Image (tube, rainbow over all chains, first blue to last red; front, top):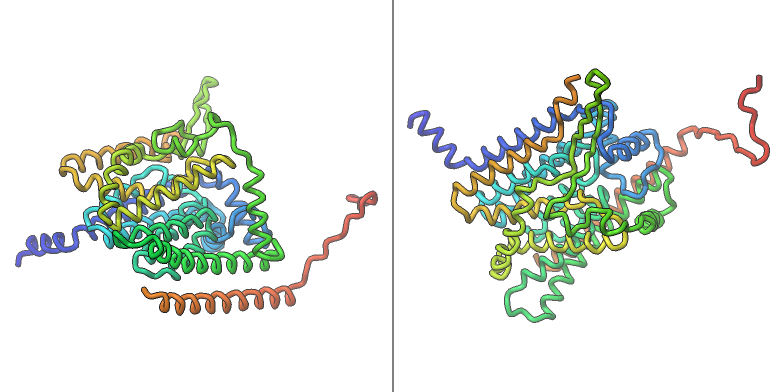
Length: 395
Length: 54
C-alpha cells in the first residue's frame, strides 16, 4: 500500500475524529490567543468573580449568592499561574473546549458521527459560547458539567448523573433544572402505548435517583464551603440566603430587559468590555469588545430545526427527544423566572449545546452544498463578532 | 438499569459523600485548632479608638 493510499485509509476510518481534534485545537488556540486581552482589566462579571476567587484564597467568604465550585477553580488557577488574565480565564477556556468534545460524544452515541461533528462545529463557532468560554464566569463550567451528566444519563447511570448534576449545581445553582430534564426524558422514552401509571413510575424513579444524588452532592459541597469559610452555620441556611437574594432582585419592565422570548430572534447586544483611546486632535475612539450576542446564523435556524425535530420526537428518536426536552424545559424555566426577577441573555448558554444539536440534525438532512454554505456563514459571523478587536490595542 | 442496581449506586455515592464530608469537617476543625487566630480589637460604640496617638 502506498503512503497516499494509507493516508486515505486513515482519513476514511478516523476522518471524523481527526476533524474533531483539529476543531478542538483551533478553538483552544483561539481562546489562548486572546486570554491575556485584557491582561489586567476585567470583562463583564469577571468584576464579581475574580475578586471572589481572590477572597477564596485569602479565606474570606464573599459572593455567597452563587455556589463556590467555579470560583474555586478560578482560585486554584490563580494559585498555579499567578493573578493575571490567563489564570482567571483558564477554567472557562478548558471547560468550554471540553464541552465541544462532550457534545460530540453525546451526539455520536445518540445519532451518528456526521451529526455529532456538525453539532461540535456549531458549538465551536457559536459566538456567545466562545465569549463566555473566554472569560472568568460560572456558566460555561456549569453547563459543561451538565453535558457530562447527560452523557451518564443516556448510559442509564441515574445516580452518577445526579452526582455530576450536583457538581454542576455547585458551579451554578440553575443547573438543578437538569433533574426535571432527566425525568421528562425518561417519561418520553416509555414505549408507545405504555400506561400513564407506568410512565409516571419510570419518570418518578429517575426523578428520585437523579434528584437525591444531586441534592446529596450539592448540599455536602456547600456544607464543606460554609464550614471552611465560616460563611453559614449550615448549607440549608446558605440555600435560604441564595433564595432571599434572588427574590430581592426585581423583574424590570418588559421593555427594559431582554426577555427569554427575544433570545432566538436577535436582540440589542450588550458590550462586555468597553474602552476608549485618544487618537490625537482631541478625538476619542471607543471600542466595544466581547459582545453578549449569540451567533445568529446558528440561533435563527432553531425556528426551522425545532419543528423539524417534532416528527423525530414522535418517532422516539432518543437524540431529538433529549435535546427538545432540554431546550424546552430550560427555556420554560427561564421564561418563568423572568416574571419574578431579571434574566440576562447569557442564561441561554444552558440551551446552546442542545440548540446546536437540533440545528445539526436539521442541517445534516440537507444537501452538502447547503451545509457548507451554512458553515461558511457561521464562521463569517463568528469572525465578524470575534470578541477581541485588535485595533483597540494598536495605540 | 434496574432499580436494585441504582439503589446500590446510591448507597455507594452516599457513603463516598459522607466520608468526604466528615474528613473535610475534621480537617477544618484540626486546621482551626492549630492556626493562631487574629485578635480583632472590638469597637465600642461611642468610644472610638484613637487612630493616630500623635
